[in-house]
Every structure is written in structure tokens, then in C-alpha cells.
Image (cartoon, rainbow, N blue to C red):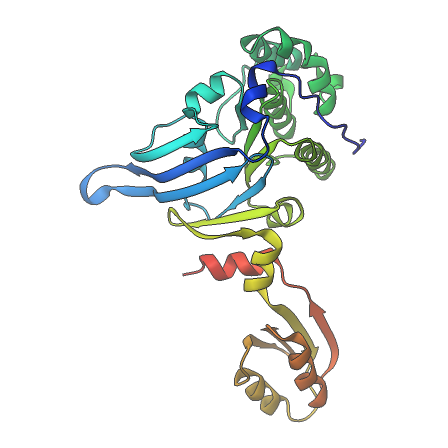
Length: 323
């Protein structure tokens, strides 16, 4: 499977004015809430969300199950109305933006008509967006690597292939904003790699991409900005590298010396800037903001086989969302 991805052709005249200026705000969310149920059984899925995303940004939306990510994306796409607050897409309501093809999504939910072929499915959705979108069908099928499956009925497609069909449906209108909710669920390794190659090309071409994922390595490798949600609210919003560095620290692991191991562990636990000291058999692991100082303590005490790992987004995510 090839992993090359050509940059998309951005030709939709209906959205030229909306996306012409790079300084424009693509998405503006203010005081957004979504509650389900009544009285004591009320569930606050989204509880006061404020978020602004500029044109061309690549934003990862992270959070544990139940954090409110999918509900927030549904409101952004106009699929559900907020309880309170506002959502605007280039100054328009989400439903209007979706109808005009300004914003499109690849969602976990929503089915496909099993009796149609892959090509027929894409052509039906393309026809809703006009002649330009219909002309884009062959290009979209090629970019999503569905051209060889074009005659296959949806019922005969695997879960990963159906996810690629949803991806094609989102691309066919050539949207300025692409919203992805667990977009690579069900895809194999090669399909996932190709998907993100296509997304990188789209981002380089100026498309705004907002995606929710449980694959933290995808967010770490692809997102330039990460927003973390927990219990319906935003608990962190920063450039991905900064978020990882500020909250992660470096992880160190070493074999304890033959003698004095307990004393060393006690020293580590009492050293400022060193946290999460753990001992497993004869190996100690810890997290430290100053990895050089921590390494010096370990080596001077006779520890050996030292390993130092750079901070990861997973470490930051865990620190932000654990109770």
C-alpha cells in the first residue's frame, strides 16, 4: 500500500470568501453546555466549553471515556443543539456550514447503506454538494485508496474499509474544516499510516483539522495543539510539545545497586522534583523534571543500566485526567 499523499485540490468557489484570510477564526465556541436528563438524573456531558480555533490549525481533542468529546463534536457539526451557549463556524451556525460544505466529519456513529457500492455511496453524497463535488469523486476514491474497491458493496466491506468510506464522504465536499471522531478505529496499521499521510497533506494545504482519538501517539505525532477534556470541561489547552514538556517530565529507570538500594529509594522519594518512584524487583523507575540531577543521584549511588525517556503526551494526559 502506498503511503504517498498528494495535496488536495481546493477549488470550491462557494467557500473562497470564508477561508481567504488566514487570520480568521474558523471555530468559535462560547459557554457551550449540553445536559441530558432532568432533576437529580441530569448528566452534564459538556459543562461550559470555551474554545477558539483558527483557520489551518490541527487540534487534537483528548479525554477519557465520558469526557464530552463526542458530544462537543456533534454540536460543532450541527448534529445536536446545545443546552446553552453558542457555536459558530466562520460566523455561521453549524448546520448552515455543514449544508454549504464548509465543515464535514468522520464520526464513530452513523451507518452506511449496505446495498450500495462504495462508488455509489460517495456519488450520492457528492451529488448533494453540486457538480464540482461529483467531479471530485475519482480523486477522492484514489486519495482514500478506495478506487480498487469502488464496485464492492458496503455490506462486503470490513469495518476499517467502511471507516475509509466515511472519510471519503467527508472529503468529497472539499471542506475547509474536517472533524474526525476516532477516525482510524478499525483500520489496520497500513491504512492508519496512509490516513495520516493524507491528513498531513490536507493540513499543509491549509485545511483546519479537529480530531478526537484514543490513540495518544496519533495526537502526539500529528496535532500541533492539544485540548484535553475531563468531565465536560477543558482542563488543558496548549501546543502539543509544550503540554508534553510541562506536565510530563522525563522518565528514568535503573537497576538498584547491590547494597544500599533501600537508602537510595528513600533519598529519591525525598528529592524535590522527583515523583512516582516505583520499585519492581531490583529496578527503580521515577519521573523527574530535572533528569540530569536525578541521573546523577542514581549513578553516584551505584545504580546501573540507566535509561532515560523523553516526556510523552500519555504522561501529561494521565496527570490531567486521573482523579
